[in-house]
Structure formats: C-alpha cells, structure tokens
Image (cartoon, rainbow over all chains, first blue to last red; front, side):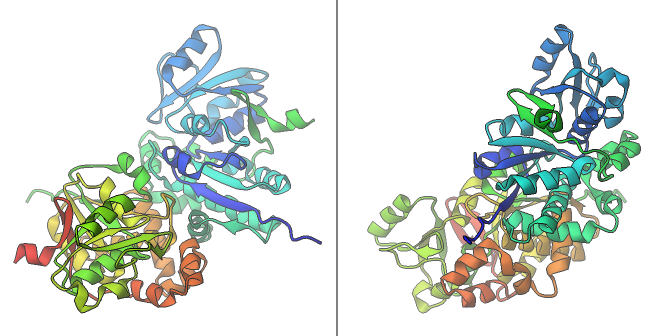
Length: 246
Length: 246
C-alpha cells in the first residue's frame, strides 16, 4: 500500500501576511473568534440562508440601500445606520431566519476577502470546532488557519483557536505535518486548555471588549460545539455547507 | 511623583509584517537566531569593526569585487565565491579582527533592511541577551522585537528568543505593557525554558540545519550570554555599541 500523503497544517497570524502563506490547493479556515466568525456560525445555526462579507463600509451601505439586512462593525462597535454589529447574540432571532445578510467587520471580513481565491474557504469558531475538524479530516487537503488578528496584528484568541484546531485535527490524523506556527500554537493551546477564559485575561482585544461590557459575548464565543454548521464561501457569499451537501 | 510612562513591548513575526507594527519611536531588535544575528554578535565579540548588511547577492558581489570580506548565505548554505556563510564559527578567527565585513542572508539582513528607518536598530541573539535587555531597560523606549522568520514565515527559534527577551525585560521593569504576540511568546518561553534545544526539536529550520550537519551551530546559537556586545545600526552599517559609547 502506498504511503498516504501527509496533510500539512499551517497558521497565518494576519490577513496582511496571507500572500506569504498563500497556497491555492489548501483549505483556508477563517478565524475571528471575537467576534465575526462566531457571529457568522451563530447566524447559520439560526437559519440564515446566505452571508455576503464585504470589505468596506461603503459596500455595506450600498447593500443597505438596496434593502438588505446589514451588519457593520468597526473597532468593536456597531456602525450607525446598520441592523447589526458583530455580537453573536444579535444573530439569533427570527429576524435572520431564511435571510441573506451582508456584513463588514474590522478584521474577519478582511481575512475572507484576502483568501477568496483559495481552493475552499470555510469559517471556524469554537462554536463549530468539532464539526469543522471532522470535515477538514475528511477533506484530506492541506489546511491553512488564517487568523484575522486585530488590524493586521497577531491576537491571542485567534491564535488560541488555531492551536485548538491543530490539536483537534491530531485526534483524527496522527500523521500531520505542522508548520512552525502550528507547533507553537499547539504548545500554547495545551497550556491554556484548563481555562481559556483566564488565559485570555490580558489579551488586548478582550480588554477592549470588556471595557464595552461584552463579557457575555466573550464567554459565548469561547464555548465549544454549539453548532454543526460549517459556513463555506461560494462565489461572493458564505452559505451553510450542510445545505450545499444535502 | 508623576507615574512613569509604561514601556510597550511588541513582537512582529515577519519582516513582511513590519509595516503593520512599524513605529518610528521604538527601538527595533533584529532577531535571526539560526544564524545571522548570532553570527553578527560573534563577529563583533571577535573584534570586527563594522558589518554592512545588504539585501541582495548582487550588492554583496559588488562589495566583494571592491575587495571587501563578504559573507553570503541562501537557504542555510554559503553562496559560492564568498568568504563566509552565516555559521558563527566562521566569524571567530583573526580574519575578522578590525575588519569591515559585508553580509547578506536569507532572512536576517532582510529584517534589518525593513527596519532601517526606526529610531534605533540593534541586533539580538541568545549570545548577547542579558547585555541587550539591560541596555533596552535603560533606554526607556518602546521595544519592537522583529523576528526574521524563514522566508517571511513565522519560525519557532526567533519566537522563542523574543519570549526570552520579554521575560528578561520583566526582571528589570515590572510595568511593561505587552502586546498580544509578546503575551503568547512569554507563555511559550516559560514552557520551553527547561530545555530549549528539545523544544525546538521539531522546528522546520532546525531540521533544515540538522540535515546540513550543523548541530554544533545550533547548540552554540542557543547558548546565552557569550558576549556583551550590542550591534547597532549607524547609517548603512552595524557597529559595536560599546565602542560608540566609549
């Protein structure tokens, strides 16, 4: 029997750095734990039909003028004149069911935009981590974990999640080939495992959100396995992969 | 007494990402543990007068034609037709004493080039870590730890050293403000502390060097405090800071 090809797993800490890691054959996982990718997973869990990520407020506004539901966040705050910010709790109501929603966020939608030409682009968060890792394992493709970071800088919560995915993938596949960033993240994740909430205590973005009284959001965004949806990019929109496959 | 300004310490994992972290008021520490910055510290410890880092092989060749001693490395191997590669052991002899040396390397000289307009640019390695951290503490300036990485990707040994510097700086200053990358690195360093050599065991570049039979180089590059020199960029050349100050 021929030896199976080793699956490579790599992590990129910033959309700005994506051109360096770019590999059109890989599955790219978009990560923006606090809070864009958590909100996107939540919206699909609650029945959203389609999410169109756009990079700029201007694009978001033009969709709004056409009558779309639009979420817009900058610097952790909902932009005036739009329907949502990026709190997952605002994507839970009946108002999202069956709807197409347009969103723009400080970091997450920029990462989706950067990776749009990859083989497949999916959305990850603690909320769907196990479903995501099972699917990635079945794909048998190289994986690039693309952390959105904060304004193109490294952030702790996205790195922590990338470490969690790396460890989770190992459960299903013992022959992973890890890039240096994933090696570091796996160590980090093992260290944080006992209490991720405490681990993130000093992170810059957590402090930013805590100042805005968003502790409930943070706690929710760090809770694993609340959904089995895997949002995937098709053309210019994210859709629920389960519905694509079924 | 007025509260002292908090010193910020941040780490950037790739020269490619430097524009995102750039802050002309910070002291930038260039890090390329295996092996450029270790070799540079070694050359000054052994009496080199000046080191001119250049980004390309072509520039290096034009210096060579003018009669300079020139070190050139690409992909961990000495480029044919030059005097040195980037093994620290080749910068220890009488041949470097009092000399101006030109060098170009895969990663380290690119990082120096990227940061050339910063307030001050100094060179760090385990070999000079304590002298470097004492000096940084006295400077009372924000610090940006610029990891050279491997071809613009994150690497483990540079990250480990950035973590070591962060921890070392804390000894002298309890009021540091750490960026998220430094928070992560400090955790990582604490984890690796007992045996950095073992910690790096799976790193991509260590494997690359081990294949080239450079274990002796790796061991030396991970040995703390072999010198008190701090190379600093003046114009287009690195010089020994101690000689500048005395």
